[in-house]
Image (tube, rainbow over all chains, first blue to last red; front, top):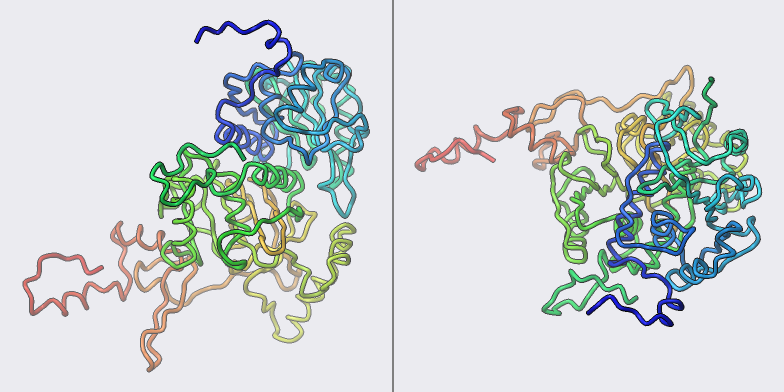
Length: 210
Length: 315
């Protein structure tokens, strides 16, 4: 069939999801799980044919389709929340409720890290249930072996230095404070164009000098 | 779910299962719990454990964790008390062969996922491998404090004095810490965790392990984890440091030392032998030419003495 689509249909139908929902989600999950268990070590994640509406990126969309469903209230940053196709894409494929209260969110999608709000605004979990916290999915330009911060702790046999493009430097002291509240706190997944890196709350962060 | 797996049997003989049995919503729920467990090492994350087509106590927690992480390119190994060929291991391996059509192995080095009941393989695990434990009672404080509300508070406040009292009472009564399995550990200096009923011999292997360790308790509905390269310390006292079991003799089949041995009763006159509990490790050593005192060649040679002997192989 020719790839010709009725204009009216094209404007109203959400972009397609995983081509193979079972195995694509499994592959994406393994990348996410490895990212979380090896903080700061970037994992490739092939988003395949996913072409989500901007500013949602293919990798972030793959994470969303893998982890979101009707059990997970999702908070969107301003740029995403203002984009109807993004909301429609998420609700059509995952059925997730969208919340405007960050402290209620199981996941937060952040497309504009330069203006991201403090991690402390999101659900932190409690000492008795630290799992009741928000996981932040932050879309960034590039995750590199740069020299912004040094990470150590569970998952790391040696400290690892990483740099994350587009992240305001003010966020790092907030993330150091996030670690200080362990076991409470948020977990982060940074998604760049073709992969992701995890920053669970268990990771110790120190700012690189110079 | 609409996402029925296309590897389901075409002949329809068993109907169609979703890949790895669980439906996709259940997998997502378990996957989210696993991520929290990794982020808070040693903390028991509650999850909505499902009924599985096997009874509680048969590893339903481990099976659900494995089903949620398993992919079509994984190679699965399942062990029960170190052995690949006991009932529990055989049936779980067959379960995933049937429902996920994945490759299975008995060789530790070849496996990407190893589901285990009560042992850690002798061979050192590598980066990228995942060890999934079947856990009966995930709460290390449960036999000291039966109320979940209280144990939860004790973990929240990092109040683990009761566990040390228990170990102290061991010393007062027996002169040494008499706990030999499910020996409590502290993970990354924060949570006291039950390593599942592995012999304490295996506790040191959990420390700084290169592989990811995931724990599933089906009946108790808990998932917990130890990320790779994480500090795992067995609780002890300065004057009664943690010690592992020692065996007087090497394995009777492969002569391995520094491994965990099972006692096998041979007759009703006190005859017995001690052999590797890790069958794969033992077989690999024997293939490599190691021989223990009861390896069997002599007996086999004697038995076949009357016949034309056509081989050295006594196994």
